[in-house]
Image 1 (tube, rainbow, N blue to C red):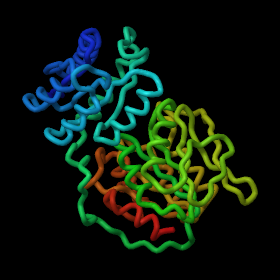
Image 2 (tube, one colour):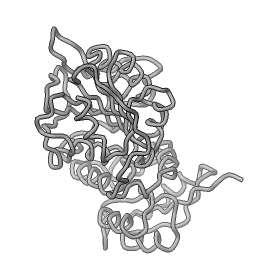
Image 3 (cartoon, helix red, strand yellow):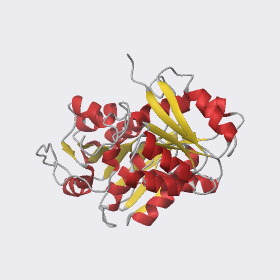
Length: 347
C-alpha cells in the first residue's frame, strides 16, 4: 500500500482552499486532512493533526502566515510550502519565510485570489511531494559540531572563482555559507540557486543584510572579482566566459535537452567555470532534489579544481550532494556550518 501524504491547506480565501484541495487530491498519493483560514487556526491544527506538509498563505487575518510559520517551526515543526501572491512585497516576505524555515514556495499566478490556479497544478503537486521528503529537524539553527566524513585535501593552486549550487532548502544554506566568509575573500563567487527570476532581487537584498561580502544580481558582462558574490538570475542560465585574462559572467539560455525545467542550471555554470578557470575553480554543492550540478562538479574536478559537498547530516534534501558524492567527484564532505571555513582553507 502506497504511503499517503497528509496535507494541511491554509488560506483565508475559501475559493483558494477548495481549489488547492481539489488539485492536491487529484493525485492519489496526496490527502488534504484539513484546512485553515488564518495563521492561529493553522498552528492549532498542525499541533493536533501533525500533517506531513503545510501549504501556507501569507496575507491572512487574525495571524499572518509569517508569524504562524515561526510558531510552527518552534513548537511543532513540519515542512511548510509558502503559497503567495505576486508583487514586490510578497517577494520580500517569501524570502523571509524561506530563511525562517519554509522549504519551498509557490507563486499564485494572478494574485491573492487566483481563479486560474489550475495553471500551476503540476507545480503544486510536485512541490508538495518534494516537501514531504524533507527532514525538518535539519532546519534547526543548532547544527552538528563534527563532520561525519572528512577527506584530506591539498590545493594545487589558489582558487579564484567559487561556484555554489543549491535548490530546495538553498536560501538558508547559501546564507549560512556566505555569512561565514570574510569581506576580503580573495576569490569571486557565483551563486546558482534554483529560483524564479522575480524572487532573485529579494534574495540578493536579504543576503546583503546578513553577509559582509558585496552581493548583486548577475547581469550580462559582469566581472568576477574578489570579495563579490553574483546571484544568477532566474529564467536563463548564467555561464562564465574569459575575455583575455578577465573572467566575466554572461546570462544566456543555451538550448538542448539537458536544460529541462531547471533554470538557472548549476551544471552550465560549473561546466563553464571548469573550462574557463581550470584548477583555480572551486565548486560547492548544497541541499537540493535531483542531480543538477553533478556534471559540473565532475568537470571542475577533472580540470584540477576543488569540490565540496554538504554532508547529509545538515541537508534539507540530500539529493544533489548525494548524487555528486556517488559520482566520486567530491574532495570534502562537511556539514553546512563548516563549509565557509573549508572554502577559506581551499582558497
